[in-house]
Amino acid sequence: MVVHTLGENNSLFNRFIAEIRDVNVQNDPLRFRRNLERVGEIFAYEISKTLDFADQSVETPLGTATASLPKDEVVVASILRAGLPLHNGLLNYFDKSENAFISAYRKHTEDGKFKINFEYISSPSIDGKVVILADPMLATGSSMELAYKAMLTKGTPKHVHIVSVIASQQGVDLVKNNLPAENTTIWNGVVDADLNSKSYIVPGCGDAGDLAFGAKLG
Ligand SMILES: O=P(O)(O)OC[C@H]1O[C@H](OP(=O)(O)OP(=O)(O)O)[C@H](O)[C@@H]1O
Ligand SMILES: O=c1cc[nH]c(=O)[nH]1
Ligand SMILES: [Mg+2]
Image (cartoon, rainbow, N blue to C red; front, side, top):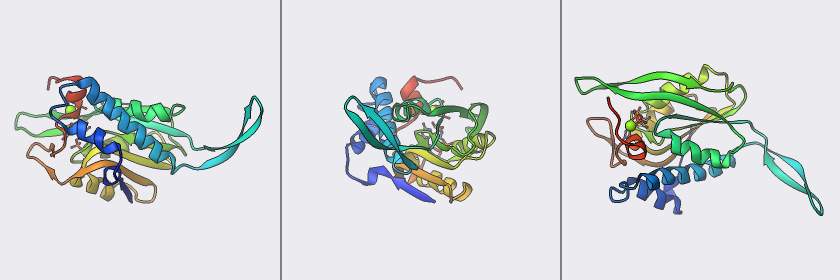
């Protein structure tokens, strides 16, 4: 399975990731959401290079130009709720894409553990389409694996691009070991080595959903 980690290259992308992580910037939720959106736009641009293209004619006021344009049908899918700003960023560039939303969240139990609760999926058919499945955090990888399986109930995709802004090595390994290598690609912003005892990524950024939208009950 091909794995891209965009933060390994020097670019402005790394500034956005640094701000997402920075506790002194995180007190501005508008900026936190906007930075997730901005990295979503960059992921979209990079993923677009992997699509199939075909020449098309474009009528200008003065003649006919030829443009090489993507011909794949794209479905942008994201996991609620932290995935929403990232979804918006991807959709800013894949503006003609279809969309899917998956509800998968950590449900905590009294013993301090949690399981992933799945409640809802809204998706078009993904038969023969390129699916971009996004969540800012790939920690244990359980939410992503569950979301992937939920998407497969909607058809057989041509290719699936898994997008995470901050991943753990454990999460990347889970995706690599459990999703088909031949038609899956992983796109990370950065990959951190550790998870803490509550399965939060370290150094990570904290709870992305809470930082974007505020604390929630449960
Ligand atoms: O890789 P995992 O161990 O499954 O953890 C990652 C998941 O945890 C977070 O969601 P969370 O459950 O906090 O929901 P939220 O988006 O509502 O905050 C995050 O956005 C991922 O969906
Ligand atoms: O580090 C983590 C792990 C799961 N969810 C988050 O928002 N952050
Ligand atoms: Mg959360």
